[in-house]
Length: 197
Ligand SMILES: Cc1cc2nc3c(=O)[nH]c(=O)nc-3n(C[C@H](O)[C@H](O)[C@H](O)COP(=O)(O)O)c2cc1C
Image 1 (cartoon, rainbow, N blue to C red):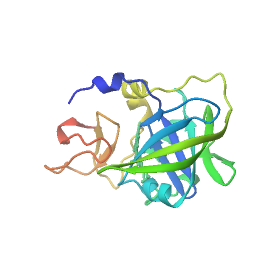
Image 2: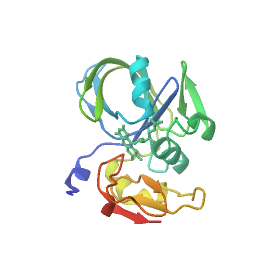
Image 3: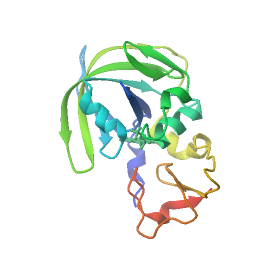
Image 4: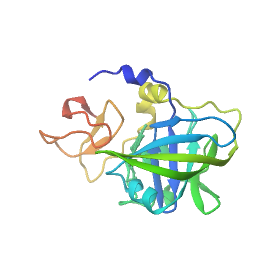
């Protein structure tokens, strides 16, 4: 699988709304002006996908290179279906939406449109408001994350099972062996891309 798309520069963010959220990188600015549009792709298998259909507002928070790795672990490698993510990290409230507190800043976005494809819902969101909280921190890019993801993925063994790390996206699979027909639920690569932690 080609890694050339790691060279497309974009960031790593937390996307939260009422009831949960997850880490996203598939974010792009579509238009400019006072209230620009952004697109955000949310996988259909994520709990967050249900939430972005029942809520009209989301908050996109910009993460820094030195972000608390717990935020990536909790929001990027666990589902709200298994844990309450907001109990696991320190949060602040923006309106009625919780966001992790260790962020560079945040954007309050209104969902104006949802485009459905086979695997993702692409949200078309209008910027309504936002604030920079930590001007001095440096934004994490997705390629930076790819180079340093071992530092962000602090694998904890669950029920004595072996942890397998997806070398493409950092997803962790727990189990003694990876099933033959397994493909990464986050980025889709097959089992050959996984290494034992
Ligand atoms: C660096 C990184 C980037 C990710 N990018 C996306 C993304 O763009 N869109 C998405 O839907 N999930 C993305 N994920 C995966 C979700 O964050 C992950 O599946 C999460 O556990 C979903 O939680 P939920 O079930 O509570 O929604 C990313 C994960 C990581 C670690």
